[in-house]
Amino acid sequence: MTTTPFTFTRAPTGETWPAKGHWQRVVMADGTITARISCHKCGYIGLLNHEIANDGRVTPSLKCPDKTCDLHLGPVTLAGWLRVN
Ligand SMILES: [Zn+2]
Image (tube, helix red, strand yellow):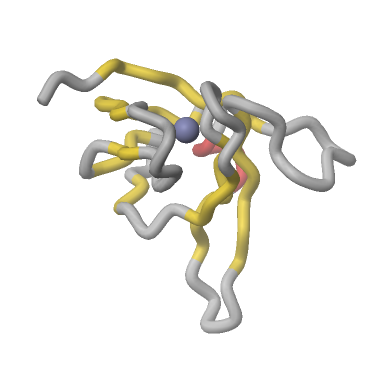
């Protein structure tokens, strides 16, 4: 399976839901910090249940959950992640 490298852009302040290719910081009820992202191809919005390194690198690779979308990304980076932790 081939994966495509991709860098998600931090959603600007005031963006309620992430636009295609954007990520937002999310704090879960148990205090876990993760990100909500939007597939830059189909716009599917979902929460990451991946490992996010301090530099924003996401592992493992990311497959869009939308059945009609064939996007498989890796390596994936969340740009600006360090600044919000
Ligand atoms: Zn998709």
